[in-house]
Length: 165
Image (cartoon, rainbow, N blue to C red; front, top):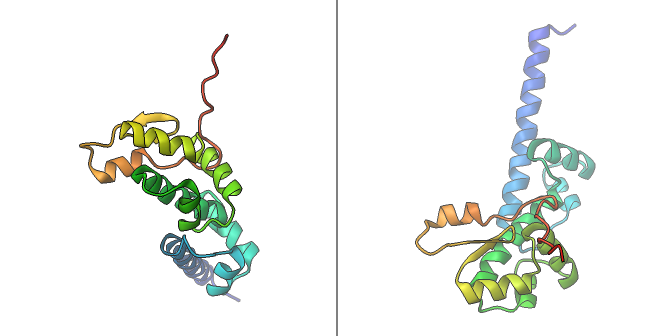
């Protein structure tokens, strides 16, 4: 029979191993966001099932691996759209999205406005738009601007204010 301290040590070792796997998956998503990635391939690379990966990833990071991937893609897309030298379609494919419609829907959910409007406003004002409000980027350190302009996850972007006629 196992002693309680051995059992605790085994459970702790398993937890650390699982966290290492999740970190490897998250790092791969961060590196290869523009590549075609799916949960099955990510899980296979760390030798666990797709369902287990999804459950553990959500428990550790608060969202599914796919939602995390899409957030990374939208973050990169906002930076490319702010530059203004690429069309929305070019940005969509540059960040690894295969469907312009799905990209536009997810971008609108996270940022609070469609990518075309985001691009026009960013080009016109030289400002970044996060969550539907202007955030001045000029003179702001890049690390601060990135944090302030980060897309909101899980459909949390505020709805545009509706005028009360």
